[in-house]
Image (tube, rainbow over the protein chains, first blue to last red):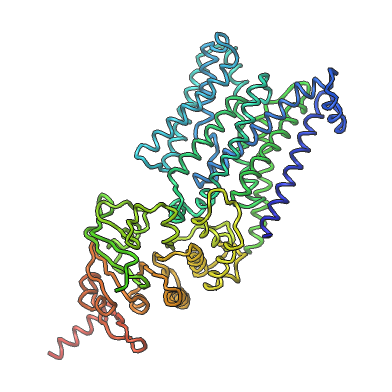
Length: 340
Length: 274
C-alpha cells in the first residue's frame, strides 16, 4: 500500500480516538464530576438515578449537537475554501450568519416567538440564511456562469447590509428583546428540542457523505478553475452545488446553535497544516476535528465560571485564535528554516 | 493521406473587442505543429478556443472527425491534454501533481489511485526525467522542472493531442532544448500529435513540421517552416527587418535580426558606396 494511504489511516484513527476521548470527557465533566469509567456504567444501567438524567438528558444532547455543528461548520469552511480557492473564506464571510441573525432578530423584535412558539427562532434563522444564500447565488450567476470573485464580493456586501439592518432592529427595540437577540447571537449548544438535534446530526453526516461526491473536482480545483476544466471537470456545476451544500449546512448550524465563529476558518487551516491539502483526507479530518474542537470548547464554556456558562462563540474565538497563531508561527519558522 | 487529428473549420471566436475570424487549420495525426505570431495577434485566443475555455461564435473544431463541443468534458480530457503557461500547484508533491492526469479516467467514486495509475505516472515521469524529484513540492522546483512536471502530468492523461502554451518561455536555452527534445521524442516514438504556441521563431523552425502564422486575428500563412519563415512574411507581420538563412546544422530556416544602430550603419554604408 502507498505510504500516503497508511499515513491517512494513522491520521483518521488518531482523530477518532481524540473524538471518543473528548466525548467521554464532556460527559463526565461538569457541575457534578463523574468518573470516566462510571459513564459507561451509568449509561448501560439506564436507571432513573440523577447521574443518568444528567448524562443522558443534559450532557449527551450537547455533545451530539457539538459533534454535528462543529463538524458541519468545519466541513462548510473547507468546501468554501476549496471552491473559492481563498483561505480567508469561511461560511460567515458570505453573509450566512448575518442572514440568520437578521431572521432571528426579526422574529424576536416582532414577538413571533411568543405568538407562534419558540421553534420559530431556529426556523426564522434558517429562512434568513436561506434568503441570503439565494440572493448571493442569484446575483453572481446572472450570466449563467458563476464568477467566483464577484460571488465573494456579493457575499461580503450582502453580509454588511444584513448586519447593519440587524443593528437597526436592535437600536429600535426594547431592552428585553435586545438581550434576547444578543444572547442568541453569542451561540450556545444548549438546545432543548431533541428532534432539532437529530435533524442537525443526520444532515451533518449526510453532507459529509455528499461532499465525497465532489472530492475529485475539489482536488482538480486546486490547480485552478481553467486547469480543472482541462482535466474534464464540469467546474460550473461543481461550484454551484458545493456553494449550495456548504451554505445550507452553515445555515442550519447557525439556526440551531447561533453564531459560533472561527470553527469554519481555523479548523480547515489547522488540518491543511497537519494532513496536507488532498481533499480525500481533508474533508473527513476537518469534520472530525471540528467536532472535537467544539465539544472541547463547550466543556470550557460551561465549566470555567460554573455554575454560570460562557457563550461558546467566545471560547472558540479566543482559544481557537491563540492555537491558530501558535501553529502558524511554528509552521512559518519551519518553512523559514527549510528555505534558509 | 494521413487523417487529421484536429481540423478547424471557418472558426470565429473571441471577445467583444477582439475576434479571430475565418480560421481554417488542418493538423494531420502525428504532426508537430506550432502557432506563431506577434503579441496580441490572437495566438492565445485561438489556443483557448481549441482547449474549450473560450466559447466559439461560429465554425467547428473537429477532433478525429468529431465535433469537439459535443464531446463530454471527460472524454475531451482523455483525448486532449493541455500544458498552460502558468503552473499553480504549490503545496502538492510532484507525484501527486502528475497523478492528477488520471482524473479523467476515474469514476466519481474511485477515491484511490490503482496500481495502473501509479505505473502510468511513473512511466511518464521517467520519460520526462521528473521521477528523481517525485517527492519534492511543486513550489520547490525551478521553472524548467515545473514545466517538465506539467508535461508529465499531461502525458499521464494519455492523450492523442498535446497542446502547449509557450512551453519554453522564461527558460534558458538548456531547458528550452531539453523540453523540446522530450516533446520531439514523444512525437516520433509514440506518434503523439503536438500543437504548441511558441514565440521563438528559430526554435519553432527547428522542431515543428508545420507552422501557423497568426496576425491581427487572422491566419497570415501556414505551411512548412520553409514556406512560412520567409523574410517577407516576417517583416509583414512583425514589422521588423530580418534576414533569413538556412541553419548550417539542420538546413531549417533561421531568422536573424539587427539593432536599429546596426541597420543605420548598413544604410549609411550603402548610401556612401552609391
